[in-house]
Image 1: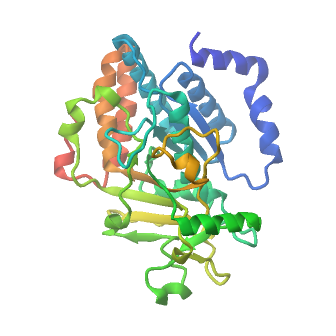
Image 2: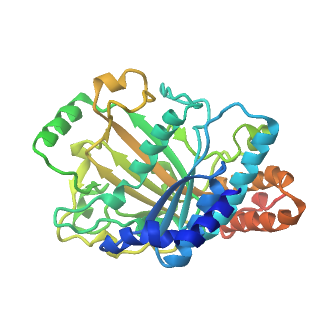
Image 3: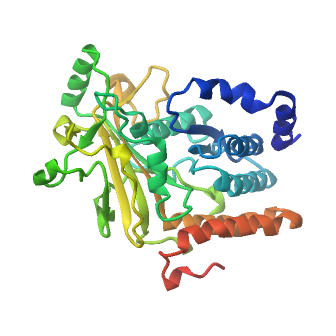
Length: 386
C-alpha cells in the first residue's frame, strides 16, 4: 500500500485533522503557524504530502512550514536510488504548491569544513545535524521581548522569503563553532540566575541610527547587501546527491543572486547585542516591501547557544561534548537563483524515472517552480532551460 493510500484510508476512518490537529489548535492562542517535519524521499513521503494537503484544506490561511528531511547515504541498488529520486521529485512538486515554505534538508555537500565529524550513513547523526539547523533557523519566531511582545512571527519570516513571488523553496546553511570561554562563563551565570532568553537584536551599523527603527537586525534591503552575510560551512540543500555528477559543475554559478536571506545567530557576544528599546517600532507590525532586483536581508541574534545534551551525537569537531555545554550556531535561510538550477537539474534526471502518464504533469509543475525563481531576475544566459 502506498503512503497516500494509507493516509486516505486512515482519514476516512478517523478524520485525522479532528483526531491529531484540532485538539492542539483549539488550545493555541494566536497560533503563528504549523511546522511539519517529515521525510520527502522514502515510503512516508506520499503520506506526508497528503497530510500537508489536508492541512492546507483545513487551515487555508495558516502558515505551514515543511522541513523535508532526506535519507542518509546508504548503500542502495540503482532501482532503489531511482525510486527515491522519483519520490522526492513528486513530494517537492506537490508540497511546493501547498506549503507556505518548504526547506529540503540533506546531508552536507562534501567536503565538509572545520572538523565536522558526522557519520552521514547514520540516521542518529543526521537527525542531530538537522535538529541543530532547523531549531536555530526558526529561533526568531520563538523569541519574545520582556513585555511579551512578539518580535517576529513564523509568518513574517515566510513572507520575507516570498517577497519576490512564490519562491516557497528555501536553502538552509549552517556553521557550528565552539563558544569563547568568556561567553561560556557568562552563559552559566545567566543560567544560574534563571534568566530566560529574550529577543536581543544586533546593534545598528551606525550608532546615530539607534533612535530609528532601521536596526540591522530588523531589516536591511540593499542592492549590494549580499557581501555582508557570513560564509557558512555546511550547505544542507542538495536535491540530487550522488546523481549530480558533472551536471552540477556545468551549471554551477560563480556568483549566485540572493533574493532573501535570513540570518539567525546563537551565542552572539553581549558586546554585539543591543536590547530593543521600547520607543522602537514593533518589528512584527512591519511587512516586507517588494524590491524588484534588490535582495532582502534580516538578522536575529541571541546570547544563548545551542545546548549540548549528553545523549547528543558527537558530530561537531571531536571533543566538544566533553568541553562545553552549548555551541554557537549561525544559520541562513535563503532564496536564490541556484535553487532554480537545482530544480532544473532534478527535472532532467527524475523525469526519466516517471511513467509516461505522469511525466507531463510532473514536468509542468517543476517548470513552474523554475519560472518563479527566474522571472524578473534572470539574465540572457540563464534562459536556457534545456
